[in-house]
Length: 345
Ligand SMILES: Nc1ncnc2c1ncn2[C@@H]1O[C@H](COP(=O)(O)OP(=O)(O)OP(=O)(O)O)[C@@H](O)[C@H]1O
Ligand SMILES: [Mg+2]
Ligand SMILES: [Zn+2]
Image (cartoon, rainbow, N blue to C red; front, side, top):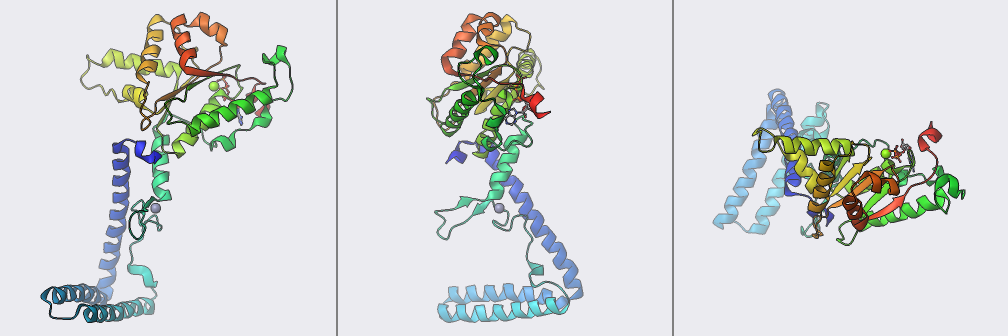
């Protein structure tokens, strides 16, 4: 179901990838056959006889010269005999019996990407297809989250279970706080395609897991087949700047990177506030957020922003218009705790 939301071109690319694999398996088989038939010409004859038997059978049925049932029986007897002879030659010469079968990378689906059901109604995508999809999504996400396998990797024990408002800036313990946030992030992921699902803003001091949490969400969504794009705020503004500078001026310019920012299903803008603030950047951020509004369940457009400037300073730092726009369509989650970089060191 979710898979349908992925653009046609990604499916087409994966299909081409699988076609290549199948062709490779069949080409390798042809090479193997050619070498083997040189040594054992009888094997070549057997293949030929199997094909001719099939033709004869079809022809006889079409001409109505035989009873279909008898002919089918006769055919399978003839072919069975030929195959037995072939297996004998192979094993007598030290080859495995399946030596003349194509060797696919995925034995489950023979590199078709699809596990077929008898009637075809319940065909399902093979695990290898899903993996290719995940690889594709991951390679195009800018994300570097090795070792992050989604929410299971998120460790809440790293957050102290102590209430200390002065130190952590919240009335509850960082542990309680993060458990609540984790719950909300799971909901965000589960209801990702719901137009009512709001964007997320993570704020809080350095090393409290904001980027890591965004990575967990990204991983979960990619596993479900969604497109994800990660940008640090400076890199995002750079890409926008390059687009503005080149589009219209430079015919060879590929606006793909900019278009992806608008079209990706999940956009992560990390470390907002680390870029130098200028009025143009405010305007650009608004343009991006505005064009990323989508009411189409088949193609959700959600954004996660992380920042380590607190909200009050965000108001000072960014234009009021931006901040109210952000607070309007984003749910705000204050991360709290000690710097996990120091704890893990
Ligand atoms: N809940 C967690 N479970 C496991 N590892 C975590 C968790 N949270 C953070 N980490 C690890 O701690 C380090 C710091 O976390 P992270 O980069 O997410 O902090 P941050 O809040 O984004 O900080 P900054 O504001 O400086 O960007 C990372 O290396 C990350 O792998
Ligand atoms: Mg971070
Ligand atoms: Zn497969």
